[in-house]
Structures are given as C-alpha cells and as structure tokens.
Length: 384
Image 1 (cartoon, helix red, strand yellow):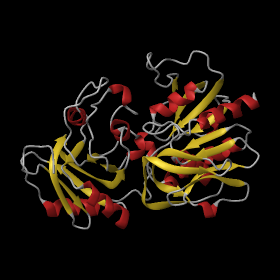
Image 2 (cartoon, helix red, strand yellow):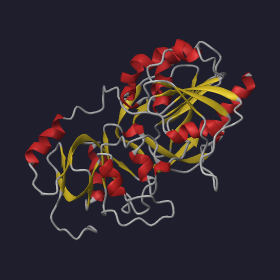
Image 3 (cartoon, rainbow, N blue to C red):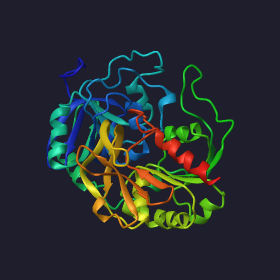
Image 4 (cartoon, helix red, strand yellow):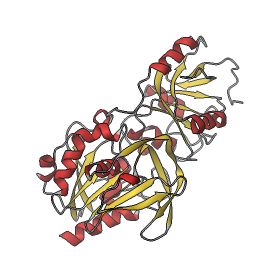
C-alpha cells in the first residue's frame, strides 16, 4: 500500500466524524487542523502547496505519484507553503527530473508542513464528495503514538472557513513593483522592459505566475495589499485594475474589498478578477456567494464560454462560488462549469469589467484561458 519499508504508522489523519486514516509521515513533525479538500491535478504539487488560496486547507492529491519530480525554488507561487498539509497515496520516491533541486519531504520539513503517505486516497476522496469537505486534524510523529480521541476533538474544534477572512493573512503588507514575465525556454524568467499599461494588482493572495502573466501581457504591475482603499488604488493613476485570487470566505473579505471595488467601478477603468477577485467583483455589483459542498480543485475542469460556445479545460481552486441566480441586471454570466453548472465568469454589460472563477495563469494546468490576460490588455489599449 505504500513505498515505505517501515510498517509502523507514523502519521494519523482524524476526521471530525471519527474516521481515522493511518499512514507514514514525511515532512515536518507536528499537528495541523484544517479543512480537507482533494485536488485531481497530475502535476504541479509544489505550485498547489504554495498557492495562497489553500490557506486553512489540507490537500489530498488523487494522483498517486506525488514528489517524483522533486522541487525547485522556481516553482514556488509564494515564499512559503500556505496549505496546512498534504495527503498522498504513495510515499515520495527519489526525484527524477532535470529541474529538480531537492526532495519533496525535505522541502516540506524545512517549511514546517506535515504530510502523510500510504493513505487510501480514493476512499478519502469519495468521503469528501459525498459528505462535503470535512474538518480534520493531521499529526506526524515518528514514535507512532497518537491520541486519536484528542485528534478527533481538534478536528471538531476547527472553526471552518465560513465567515473567515484569510486574505489579509496571506496578502502583502506593503506595496511593491513586479516586472518578471512567464518562464520561457531557454532564458527562464526575464524582466518586462517595455511595458505599455500601468496596472494596480490588489493582492488577496496573488500567485506569482498570475503577476508574471500580467507582465507578459505588457503590464507595469504595482501590487497593493488586500486592504487597499479605492483612493489608494486610484492614486497610482492606473490604466487597469486587477483583483487577485485568494483564500477564505469572500463575504468576510468583502467587508473591506467591496467598497474599494465600488469606488473603482465609478471610473471607466478596465477591471479583471480571478478566483476570489471574481467573487469580490460579484459582491461589489450586488451578487451573492455560497459555500460549495467540496469545491473545485484540479487542472482538468471544463468551462464553457457562453459568448463563443467554446469549451476551455481549466485549472481551479475554490470552495466558494458566485450564486448565478443572484446576478443583477446588467451583469452577464460569461462562463459556466460543465461539471456542475456553477458560475465561472461574469462581465458588466457595455463595460471593460470582467472576471473568472478559474485560473488562466495555468500554474499548474492547461493554458486554454491565457487569452483573458490579452483581453485585459486590449481593454486598456482601447482606453488609452
């Protein structure tokens, strides 16, 4: 059941309903409490673990071979892992990839993140799909001694993500400039030296590759903290405003984000939002958000573009969604999930203001939706 030669369990995953999974711990030792989700991506485990949108969550990877390509600092989406822990089928093997600079277990340990291998992830995924995302406690202890009752109690005590504003916890604390573009062979990451548009990116938990995509689309990017006001944003005299991805309950973050967006919408500036930024825009125009049963987490999600009838395979990571039934007049539903029909995009009629639930920066995932960055750039070009 596991690649480890040690038959003794050194990690324990306890669910709030009393279910317990034993396995082999790797990474850091300790205990973490969080919401449990599953991700179906076959690649990009490092990007997933460092995606700020996973704050407050432990990720179950449905693909069994996690860690086999190692790790490299180039693939971090933020400075340190944000996901609280990981659950995998097989213990990580020795990495085999020309870009590898280290072992996943060592990488996790140095960053204080707990992982468990040897778990029946198919059974765990079925439980999540049927019962909803559970609250869990994950413990890694090399002595193999676990107080299961205490772990179940910790899982029950976890408050959950509803009502939590996590964006302010993962956002930058002061503004900064970004000019690094997308990775390309053979140069790697190169700077944007001839930007055409000034963009303010509001950081609710922005991934680095999203900022790289903006730079690659010709943007001179200034990143502001999640708590930036409309006055703060407009003081930079931008050609466009970008609303980033991020974690937590959008209604909680909206307490301070919605007034800022509403101030920006009083201008004619192009606005583009992704993930939590999409939900923030929806709240700002009068729509509502809802908690999903188990969310969308993966790199193979089909989304239909209602404007072109094309289907894009997309990368997703969200546990809340915009309630399409609550969209007011003048707001068009542009994209829908072909998995469950949930909302995946909106636009304001007659205005260069739009957002999507999925992740067009493709980190990890397919690049079908990269055109959205070009659409944003075109909207700024039409205005200047």
